[in-house]
Image (tube, rainbow, N blue to C red; front, side):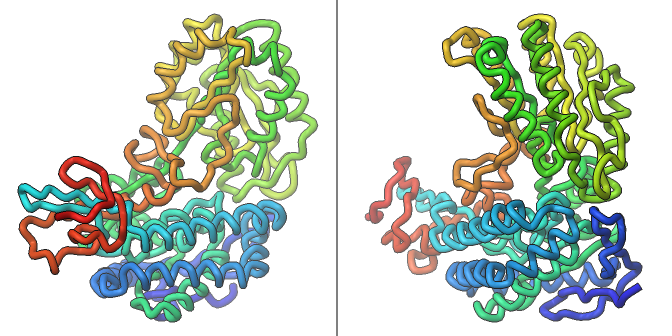
Length: 527
């Protein structure tokens, strides 16, 4: 076993005071990458939280210009080191370097970091509100303390704990970050942390603004999210682990924002099938198998009405799944999780159409899998039949009629997305108008005639939804500046002298932003 990689604590790269170690695997070879990483104990986490709390105080003097400069320099440095970062991410995840990592995910990562920098400077997101008669003014601003970020396994760059959306939003809001690397790609996270640390020095920010640990034991993780001096936590991962952390954070009264699980229901109405069945089958295959299905927006349930066109569609998709290459999964745990999930669905009455076998491709893998169940069966056991299979799998639910399809919508849990395919001639409009109001309240993002996999990094995006998609339906993990609000508090100023007010609340409006002044949104000077 090689020497363990260092942690970044309190402004210093150093050997960990570890309580254990682990080695990540290369998913394509099922062998260790050859690097060793430490498991941080309570002492190390306590030190990181205290250092972040101190940096939180210091960071106010550098906000917003120093924070914005840090983010811009960091994005530049990631791009300058892109070859090494992409190669490490490919080794640790099995994803192809091109186009997935180099051409899609890395540019998305640096783009959202630069969007965060612009938001920090602009501060229109602070929702400055002024009431002249009472002398009370308010705005959103950074929480006290650091933000702990737990990154997921499926996006080693764009959702990375030290470069992804939660990280960028927390920093842009003015909060230091304690990054807990995902065990599937600790080496990628280490390389990104090296560039973040260098960017801190360039921007002259407090050196503990960014810290990195790789793994903790469960009790230590619970202490981290519930620590008296932590500000908040952003978590993306499994429902079980997320809810365990939420229990600890809630007990301590600490905010925690969770992205947990989602099956992203897709309704394909009869007219759409008659009109363009082959095109929809092609779109569905591409969406469901993209990245070996390891997307939080993967279409995991498809609802259709019973009939010959539906039978033909199911047969067509089954053939496409059989012919498609079986991709590599991120880890042994993902492979075993697929086995468990498919067995759970089958145990609840789902019939296997194709697939259902582990080790069907290169490295960690599972055969491209389709299952089917009747609408009546689904309604008998909706909770179990919404079990998420994180990978290249989907469940077709065949309703006997429109009324049953509508009832199915009532039984969906909360999801990130929901989609309805309808024809262009209007024959599906009545069905759409009955399904949409029910589906709309079950999902964060509603789509028409488009698979849900892609998540545009634009201000209007909502990457959230009702539980269990997330821990709170009012927030998004993607979409700057809205994503910043998770790591802020509402600050009110009552009769505070004008020269002591923060810039967004000053009469002169030096930032030239829209403000709610006496009930009217305006960028005008007050007085």
